[in-house]
Image 1: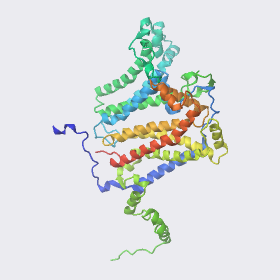
Image 2: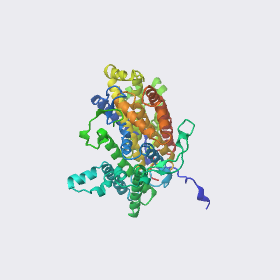
Image 3: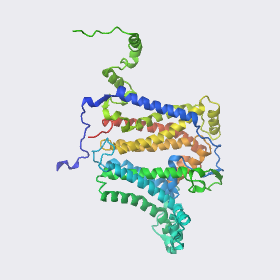
Image 4: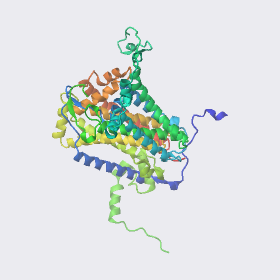
Length: 294
Length: 250
């Protein structure tokens, strides 16, 4: 067929009947004016009532405890507590932004645009996926903070004993299991990163050693959770017949992301106290620690 | 059969004529006050600010619950931040010695200084939230679909720029909150494999947050990033028009 290599079917916005139209002036301009007015007044009122914070002058010798990034980055700071720093802080956000930017190239179906929830099960998918994102993220945060083990112990008197201690947090998988010595230092590629450190001269080529238990906890498990759980969710929704199109799959993934992102931001902002311990927002105090002690 | 006669002009009509049908007004706006469909369309099409809009649009697009005005409001925040930001620039010097004192001066001694600073900060927070909500709106209405794919990509870049604008502004008050937030934030960037330490050094102009970091953040905050964002916004808005306005069902 000659039509095989058409990059995009030529869909032009079709002509519309005049009686479906309104004039930008006054209909739209009026709405925009009111919206701008409402925001101006609200922000003025807010600015009269609440002052922007200004703490003591910056002091490199006095580290607040906890030290926190601006609130919209606290989701990353929360992730950072649970996995390898490079992954949480840079690799995952970069990959996710790339995935988001690629949405329209994955979902090329043109129907259903300009409408909320155009596919049959879209509302269900959105609600359930967001719920899973919220709940799943909280569960993982609680687990990795040892709160689930603590609650089982404290409230229900359940104790796994030393046999199950490795399930307490993510880190205890590394610390509490009898990993053989060799697994903590596995030589792999003679890959010399010193070539890239800017000095231009590589050091002696040495084998890099992989700490397998550490790698599993810091990178392996987070990857499995973050790729596996959403995939499992989409697969389950597909099997259940809810996800019929790529648009549905994106709805599930994006809604799950928004749920998880919201929880990470909230927990990083309002539930992380001194030493980044999980506390209730009303117990949140900022003290002053020594440099590096956060 | 009675033919309707034009009524005698009232005082209001005379006032209207005096205000809008005179040589000076027409030199500025060309049309009279836009009170006929023709003049209303002309007013939109011939005004440089309004001509971002089409002259007519589909009825569903003025339904508040379709867009919640989120994109427009994000832009409005950008404009408001530009205005308050310029006012703050009159009083603020990005030097480690002066920055914090200037903040105190702005708050205590400049007429409406505290208000200006508050507005700038709350609008910045509002912009981050509005941009994110706008992205959600566009996603949930499927408005990223063809032919608007690339405009969605530009939107993602603008989202990142919004975060960066807010982040670079965060350091400027030079108080403990600013200093440590940026220290933590740039440490996150520094954790990147291979390029991390280099990019952190490049961002801070040194190994820790100091004068060099302050001047870099300031320059990025007041000119570099806003310029980039403005260019991308122009493309963003232009493409909305070229792609036939807001997405709507086929």
